[in-house]
Image (cartoon, rainbow, N blue to C red; front, side, top):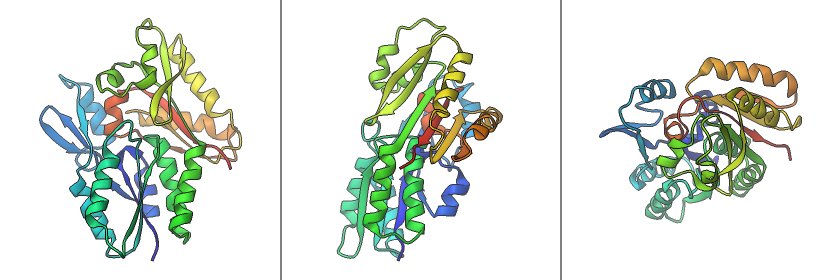
Length: 280
């Protein structure tokens, strides 16, 4: 029986990839006031960013419950004895803890659930999950699938420019990027993810220069294996950015993606970024 891959909705993988690789996605919850919406189930990226623009207060998020994970693990346990469950950084969410509680609840001699803290988030997590799922679909055993995920973790880079750090600050996810707080309004911060938390990369003076800097970083490794590019809430801008990248990265699988509602809570609208999987 094939190893099955479980992740959470912060992976932001396009639906067609999730379906093609048989990945099971457990949704986080986004709250607008007291209204609870499952990420990717009750609300998609387009609807979220449209609503974010008119919301009277910032939305908030909540990790999946252990019960949600338990139900997923028990269902998959009817068709496989091996599950690899890969999640966003434990420094950014309690999602991995919920998965751990659920694993203990369903643990029995015939089912092996391997939990992995990816130490990244969003499309960085998506690239790790995709590598694991490709290995599983090719027939790799549990140890080899885990090894594929961990190799990808060592090679993933995430860089993004945000209009403001206010969403990260209010959401308590700003990490070491707090060093950018207090910058003048014209400065656009570029941040990344390192060792599981948000970190500062550099500051540039205009949005246009920030976009060009992201482009430079995205094309620096001409032998990268895969790359996801995204502009939150703007599919046309995402497609245009991908179209610019592809001619310069002929050896790289360059794909557009949308940052989902949970990640959008912390980045806000108009964030532009890439997740890169560098070569072996």
